[in-house]
Image 1 (cartoon, rainbow, N blue to C red):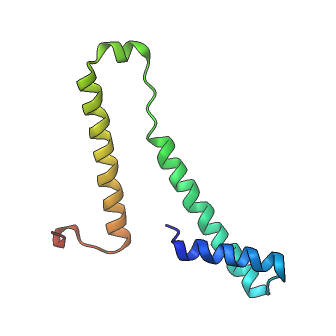
Image 2 (cartoon, rainbow, N blue to C red; image 1 turned 180 degrees about the vertical axis):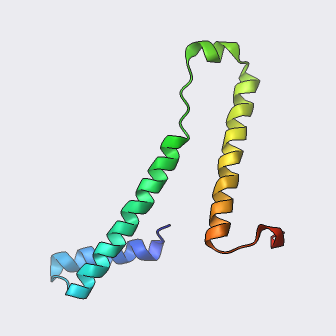
Length: 99
């Protein structure tokens, strides 16, 4: 995940690059931050695309509105649980110790 501090640093390096140029170390830092930003962007885009569900008209006619809403809510809750588990694992948080 890319933090606000990292985005601020990317922008700072971009401004400096246009104003006066970057040192070799700053160019390397900028490239690393850009790759990290692009990876996070791709991950978010993939998650959004993975959450898209194509439904045909007949399927909609066969289900009641309550069934459709329930299915959407269940899918959303599953995705939230998965994201929480990923973040907890990434931050080394044991879910059994969280109240």
